[in-house]
Image 1 (cartoon, rainbow, N blue to C red):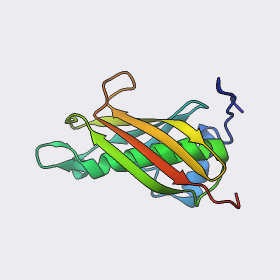
Image 2 (image 1 turned 30 degrees about the horizontal axis):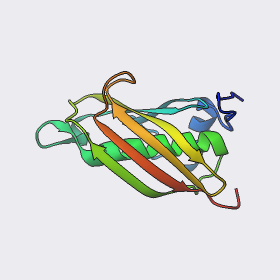
Image 3 (image 1 turned 90 degrees about the vertical axis):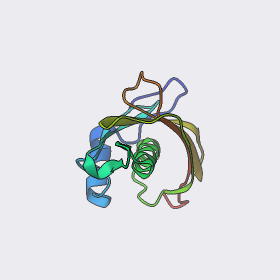
Length: 147
């Protein structure tokens, strides 16, 4: 287990999380969306946007970026709490900041609160981790009591 500066540890590392998701939710980690890494501080998910993820005007569609952010949030939470397949999104708020060019985007999620029943995180979606975000999301997940 890896420890974060705030004392958090990983319940599942990158490979363990990939293996778990392939078993219980194979639709999520695909050629389009791919878990890159989880650490105690963040989760990074890559979107490889092709023709099917573009909208008129040649930009990555909003729903595609929303799915990327939701996946990054899910990965960040599961990496902390372990294999809880039924953790579910209860809210997701988006600010679209600029038009992304076609191509890869990453979602970088940092958890703001990790409680027994609720987790809140923010996701920056950009071309690289250092680039200005094209959108910013804040989401809340409900974590089942029987985990």
